[in-house]
Image 1 (spheres, rainbow, N blue to C red):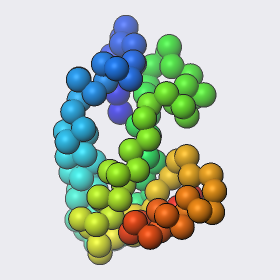
Image 2: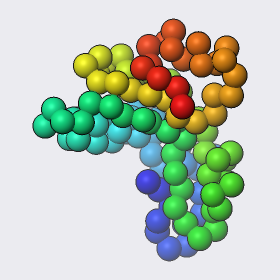
Image 3: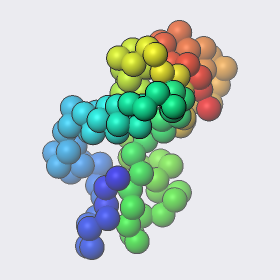
Image 4: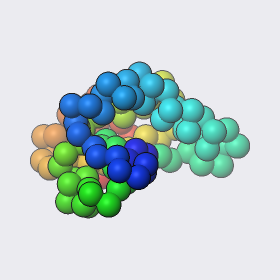
Length: 109
């Protein structure tokens, strides 16, 4: 999560320079590894868009401003084949659903 610091204003242009994409992915994998380590949780529904927390950023802004990162969800599914990794966010057509399933995710929501 980003945008929790007082006075922080999210802008797509500056986010990638603050948190690199590899660092963002590393944080995601660390979280998944921690949660899945006990073997109880095996299903993960990953929203392809980061959530920005802050007073100046509305839920509607969260649904359209931060970039979608489908490739990170696909990568997670490839790197953790023992888990069910579903993609959530922005896929609006059956063609899109089929494409994501063909790319290796377990489901599309």
